[in-house]
Image: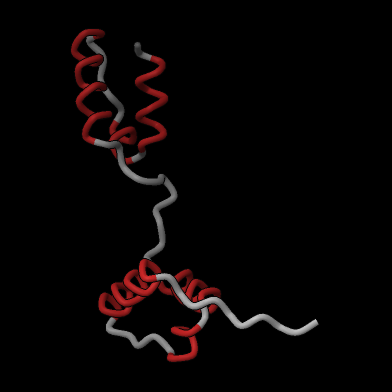
Length: 95
């Protein structure tokens, strides 16, 4: 069975890789720029590590949670502001 030619990277993938390269002041190997899977591997190896907590709470979550906190006279735990999932669970538990 003949091997299919590798797919070229998407525009979004190239833009993201270039942004990472600028941030790190690093070069993307030319061989990675011609293959979608190879570039994806390079991105995974060089992107900033995500925090274990996940993305922070959104501004809409914070506004709604603060409204609930005022009504219920409860404090919102600090860790909820750093994790959207925790904030969502706090909101659900305090509706």
